[in-house]
Image (cartoon, rainbow, N blue to C red; front, side):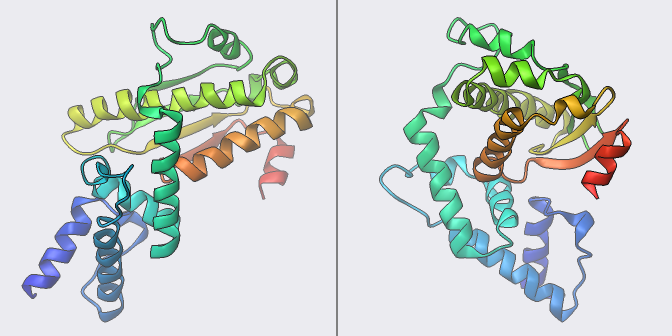
Length: 238
């Protein structure tokens, strides 16, 4: 094995690139894939605008890998999404917003929003050290949520929840695991779910949240489990 091959493979191991989905070997095809990955990550290091001078410090290999994976390692699309995310965080002051903890800067509306959800929390970790996020989706009061909460309010609440997970929970889990933890395992508990939750205004709210996650928080999902799903949910999912 040449020094170049060893270096490239060690880099991929370091950033934990979806190893379970790619069988790394020294074959010609896989080596070309690894070289492409290295090239994309290396190129992203040179993204620089007046607002992005701290990119090198804040966006490490793990972060760049998540963005690159989300865009199938197309360099132009990855750069576009990364720059949009950096610009959005800067314009919206995302890094300085109060997090949903015991903080006097947190809007009083947020505890009320929690009341419309069936309950959610991060409970323990999986075998890889990732937090297990449990969402009791079957008990969401979707109609009241759509009636009393505006899209902007729900979006701002969700952003704070995401930031709390990424800036507080994941760094602590990384410290405990002795490695970078930047994904989570999600369990959707559908017990209690029924047609009453197929409410168009609330589905519109949820869709906007999903689009925001895909755009600004790519690659955070490690594994997804759906449990206690009713028959209609299974048919729709398929």
